[in-house]
Image (cartoon, rainbow, N blue to C red; front, side, top):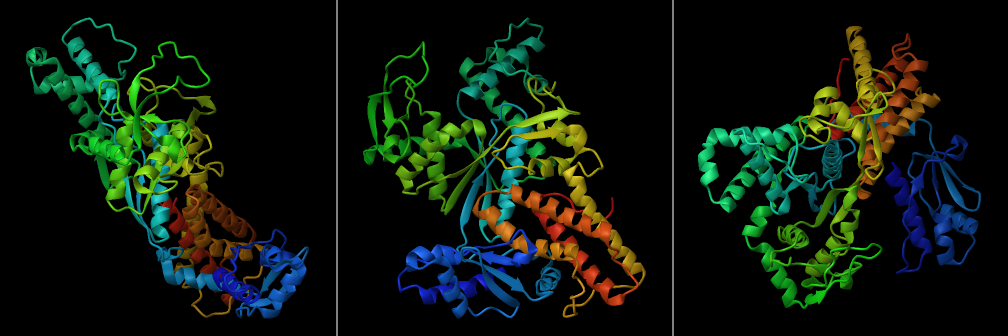
Length: 564
């Protein structure tokens, strides 16, 4: 309906504009006051400057030309030139039949410009179990993927395994120290060593596979490599299990180690050289702070400043091996070569300073501006009854994601993580997440769905069915009923906006709003009454509401229970 109104305005505007003139974006909004109509447009104000006329005059010209669809009762000019549109009574209730006819596909659409998208998220270092912050990024990425799929895009969920570099060496050393400790040796652990029981578990497993004497006699570099890979494999097994507990599956696990072994990192550096995009130079010390151990050293530098970064970036370390940045460029270049139309990365907020340099490199190699799209996810403040929860024996330094999922359940974790924008810090109270009250958002939404199911079961027991398509729904005239209908209409637009703006949190806030609208209606009106027509209309309304709640919860990866 909204699109048909926009088409009518667009056609009228085209008649006013000269050939070749740019058509402004037409956006209909819902007025805050009901007396201002069902929709409002500021199109006349947008066209005023182009046409050289006052906005009210442009609005009059538009209304003189526009051919509204039959659902429009009237349109009027308000204020400096807004157009307020009033719909015929009960015209919007047709959405109920749309919902019931389309079922779980309501709100989805076939995208004319379908994109093949690589969505990379989580990508936690395989040096230990995932913490709660990783979990938030995992849920944000997974829900965003579902949103993008709902509006018609082809999405590949990808996890980048950081299984190369210094941190894997530190992990291997930590496990080896624990292996020695298990043999009775007194070990003075360095601060850099990874703490936590999981390191001891890996050490025990390796000692069970091969006698300690063999490990001890082995070449140190070979031993470090074998232990490091075994530790990565063990940690990735746990990470995959934790992701599965959260209801998240990946299409691709991409190994940084294999990226190096394939020669793609060095090949990318050679390609940059061939394009004249690298040079040998000396970087100045970091701005704004003194670096005691700064030494001016010649390095191979990428001309990142030519592509929007604030300084050039080294591609090789002093020992001649590629930097982490070089591997990251090669990885994103590989995504480009795999034929993705778009790249989206979900990163922790502490990586914000890394955005410009990666986008600069991708632009240099592919010509794409602003790629990858980066969604930064802020940290989670974990509390219990308002008091901070800080440490886990399993991880040694933080609370693991799995501990939280096991305590409060997958649904509570997923929904609560989506109640705020990704770039906003999130306070997550474990005690509140288990409450069966209106203060717990996932319970509030799921209870609305279960309550509707209970009403529909009661009606079925009484032999009463929701109305059939085509019946008169004009009796749905109360403010609460109209608000529910409008909420159903807004679902497809909400999904589209969430996809365009990369804001998956909108799905959770919409579900809470729809649940609130239903609860307001339920507390004021009986659904099953002595009036057959009214009962059938209300049953159809709540059945459509149940379907849209189920659809939204499905995108969030949260169950829609029929009983609670």
